[in-house]
Image 1: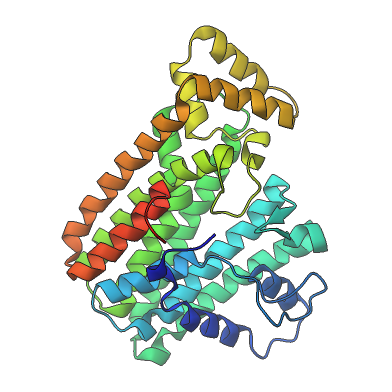
Image 2 (image 1 turned 60 degrees about the vertical axis):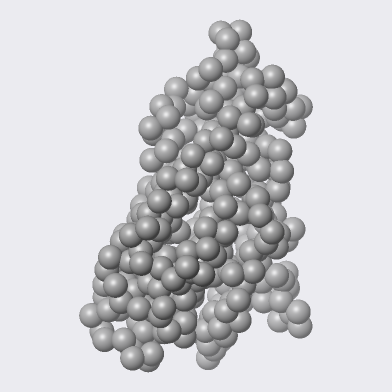
Amino acid sequence: MTMPQPLQRHISLVEDSLRDLFAGHSSPLYRLMEYQLGWRDERGDPLEAPVPQPRLHAGICLLAAQSTGGDIEKAVPAAAAVELVYQFTQVHADIQDGSQQRHNRPTVWWIWGPAQAINAGDGLHALARLSLLRLHEHGGPPADSLHLMQALDTACLRMCEGLHVELLFQERVDIAPEAYLKMARDKVGALLGCALELGAAAGAPSRNAGASLREFGETLGVACQIQEDIQMLWGQPLSGKATGLDALNKKKGFPVLYSLDHAPIAQKRELGTLFFKRVLEPADLQQVTAILDKLNARPHAQAAARHYLEEATRYLDGAALAPEGRRELSQVATWLALREGNP
């Protein structure tokens, strides 16, 4: 999936920084991590042309640095760090979900097994923290590295909490809207907000700008989760998962929760019966989407994503951004939340 141009503008700097982090490591474990990053094939051999992958968190981190008038290169270690944390969670999520493919490639656990995939995921997390410690190489004082590491670790914990709650929801149909919104804010918004905060702090230290951009990212994360729920049923998920996989795993995205809340009793029972099956089959998923279509769940979900996008955008007012920076952040946010706009 093509990312908006502002997210791709400086991504080569992140790729160089990531490769530098891996340089000098000879353990076979690093081949698994480099495979996850799109640099190796299924045999662990280097690829002449790396597999294109969205570097959303790295890109938005550097865009935050640019939008606040900072030095892009100073923010590169932070951008690499948030990208590595995201990759760490994807390796582990693939094991939890039993996902055999992501971005049209076999997942790490499917090739090397769950145990080695866990090692690879943990290695990516460790490299993320080491990347932040390199901020001093760009002139940042040690105290800045500690502050940003605290922000990254806090976001990582919240993301794990969100993933934990999402798994709990798989066996339930009585999910309150507030519980879903908190899960989305933690699972998706925490790291997006952290990426923006780290970009602002590493690029041009301003606690006010960083706090406003963090709130922007966390609220945008709710809109992103709702949109991913839509794409999981009717489109192309940004996560690179196969369409429908999360629903087959009995995850209840926003369209399903909306329908359970608004459907007549007969359709609520029908949805409940389907989601309480031991195993969902593709034919069951077709029944689910047919019910959701009758209830207009997709347009209602799109309206909810738009609502949280608008709420998120209001936080940009407190970030003291240059007009062009605000425009580009709004453009990226619209694409993430609604899949609208020219990437």
